[in-house]
Amino acid sequence: MAAVRNTPKSTSKNTPKIIAEKTDDFKQIFVDGAYTWLGDDTGTITFFADTFVPELDEHANLQIKTIKRNFPVEIRMSHNTYVNLINWMIDRKKLFDESKTNQK
Image (cartoon, rainbow, N blue to C red; front, top):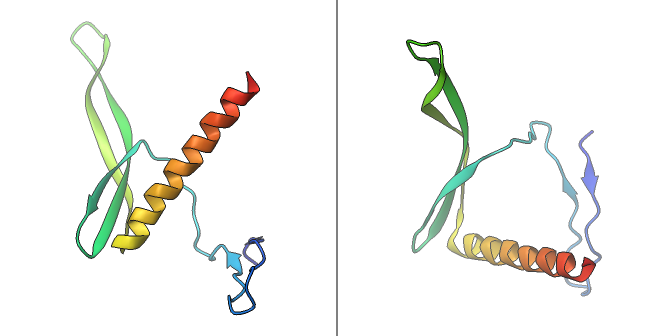
């Protein structure tokens, strides 16, 4: 059974209850960055994870001359969802920064 996350209760009788749960094929990945595109109708985020490819030179010194950029997932969404996601992330960052400032 997938893990279920409790969501806030609705403030309106007409708003449906949301049951959030992870799908059976849910996976967690670590990324180093993302490429993003926003168009009139859709937004896209392509995440990447970098792997350093070590090489030895003629003196047996380790060098990194190549970085392999892997793309584990691309997410596509509506323009509005893309904008809302960015704004939500900016708000979370502001709250995080404020909490750190208040701890000092």
